[in-house]
Length: 85
Image 1 (cartoon, rainbow, N blue to C red):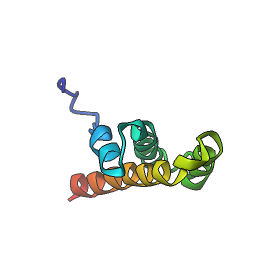
Image 2: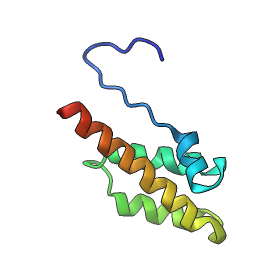
Image 3: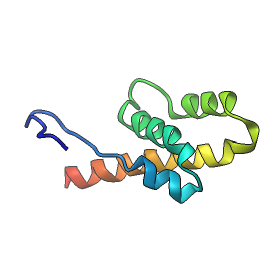
Image 4: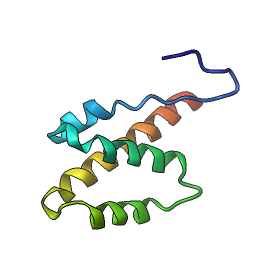
């Protein structure tokens, strides 16, 4: 990763690892969207994004995509807690 200016906070999201843990690399986008949702939670509701994901993906992969979304969200929440300590 490149050097990040000191006035910025940068979070790495292991999207591929999260997707693998859910079962397939094709869930990377949902993991990243969950991470982004956690960072923007003051601007957009988590449930609204989860609902949007559920509406646009094939029904047979909803559970896996939501699991990846939640894992991305949790990654950022845990990372933010670690930074604030």
